[in-house]
Amino acid sequence: MNDTIDSIYKKIRELEDQIEAALNRAEQELHYTIERKKILFEKGVVEFHRRLKNPLIKFIRNADVLHIVTAPVIYSLIVPFAFLDLMATMYQWICFPVYGIKKVPREDFIVLDHHHLAYLNIIEKLNCVYCGYANGVAGYVREIGARTERYWCPIKHAKRIHEPHAYYHDFVKYGDAEQYRRRLRKIEKELNGREKPGGAG
Image (cartoon, rainbow, N blue to C red; front, side, top):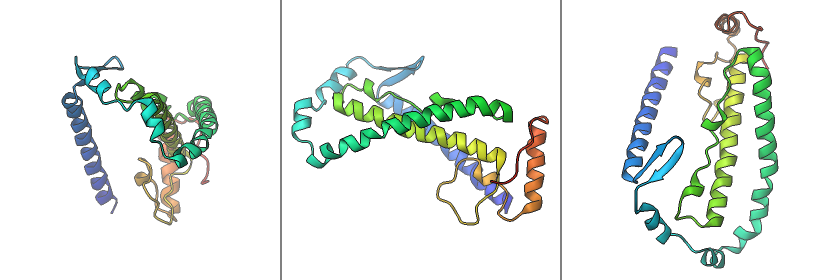
């Protein structure tokens, strides 16, 4: 059974590699390159994008009233997201070295680049940056939590969960006590005898 699951996950990783290759081809088709983390469009493309920009006045005039009314609710979440970002970063910087867990690179998840697009007006850019930050923080925190769970409590749930994190498939089956204890010993060995993992959470 485990061999079958491992085989499926291997196919998933191969598909992810194919997606990455397709995205790289898309960069060429859309006439931009990334050099030293800077996005560069081919000559003439930026001017073409500017012609497609929805003017700010027109954008506001055509905005749905309910969108305007709910905007403060959406943006009020910036405070808890920023606090979560700060606390998760502090947590992994303090605790992960103790556990021997590799830190999660924040820049791999929080990517803010939509404001460079010339076809977006200032409000669209602000919305895109906010969405990029909020969803980036969510992914960043999820990865930190996943690595923590893998260390402290690598046990699957009795109930099937929707879209588990990348480490979940390698967790011990629910109720398999012997395998769980073996897994903890394996983790301890992998971490060269550093602090012992604790019990199930």
